[in-house]
Image (cartoon, rainbow, N blue to C red; front, side):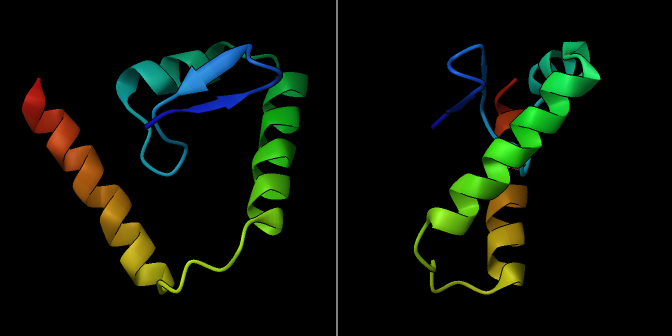
Length: 73
């Protein structure tokens, strides 16, 4: 699963558990674009329905995905 931001200008695997490649893309953005991306992500989150998961469950899910990706390399 990927997430696309800034009208398709950047696609990352996850903002919650970014890969090294994702971090490289994010660091290459201008400060203005990083702020716009964060605002867009917050807006999407605010508009989405509740997940029914706790913050700890969401964090653990993101952590597990990151570990799985790291082990796949």
